Image 1 (cartoon, rainbow, N blue to C red):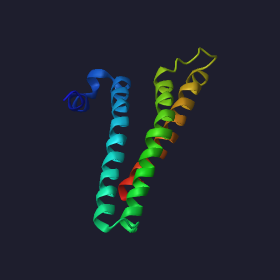
Image 2: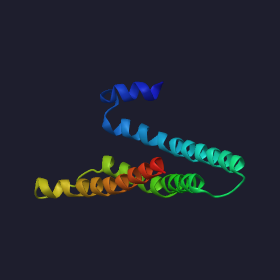
Image 3: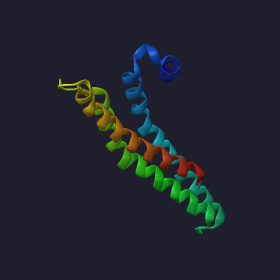
Image 4: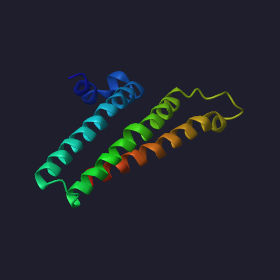
Length: 126
């Protein structure tokens, strides 16, 4: 219920707090994705007699992609997101110098986030 309220009114918390709450939900999301794929794979293998046919291979790929997201990309993405929001730009000679560290942190986060979203999309397709 809290997630629905936060989603419908993200301006109440601010972008940083909303993003942190949203990111906190991702481990459970990927764990449920992996668990549901494992159950589906087990049911399929049991019904099909244990052979690794095309649907079983696709489900195994989806499990692998979910594991990559939860074990590799998630731990990389969270510190980068926090660095992006917590970046206190140093006082420099010009406004461009002060914004440089924040822009770099944002770029690093966007790259990892794009990879994670692409892998999640591939898992959905599989």
